[in-house]
Length: 256
Image 1 (cartoon, rainbow, N blue to C red):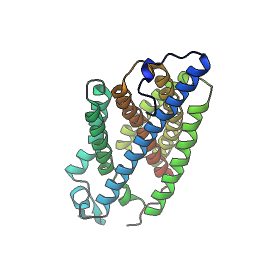
Image 2 (cartoon, rainbow, N blue to C red; image 1 turned 45 degrees about the horizontal axis):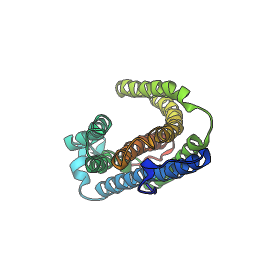
Image 3 (cartoon, one colour; image 1 turned 90 degrees about the vertical axis):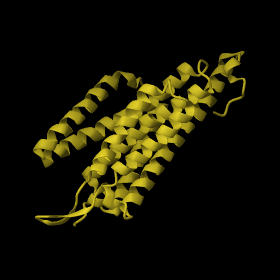
């Protein structure tokens, strides 16, 4: 954080000075959060692309003979990769205060790599061109909503419970649809999911901003460093989920 070494002991002489120092620290902190998030997305993309375009794909989705011809079929390793990110999220969420700064950061990188392995199949299902197109659509949508969450004076916390309930509903509906395999139901889930994660992006950005203001003078450098990783994880997950939902809506599927 771009602050003077004696920031925590700083005694402002006016409200204007306090606001200016706090704003400078907030901007630096948000930049750190966005850098962590962007770096995590880069790691995820590199891992997913590398696995999908090398022989490593055979460890996750080898070609097998089916009644309709050769198809990529998930292996046990692919299943493990799909659920591994959830385990890392739980460890980071519940252990962020107990783990050291280096441990939190290392877990974040491993999580992003595991997420990349779990997303390898998008290169099998969708064309590369549509993946790139939807990624930029997601990036523009995310940036706009995050900027709104940062700049708006409206209190978005009142929408938090509705967004969380919407998120839970999406998860339950997705599990139900695993059995019914309804395209119309999946389309509805994707539409609602996009709205939920667009809202969560703005909500989480405002929450991160408010949390920084609350703890700016109370926590040390290590505490701020760990919290920046956790905050980046929240935005990262919003981005990934928004990307996957938009890809299901606008992605072009491979013909084979």
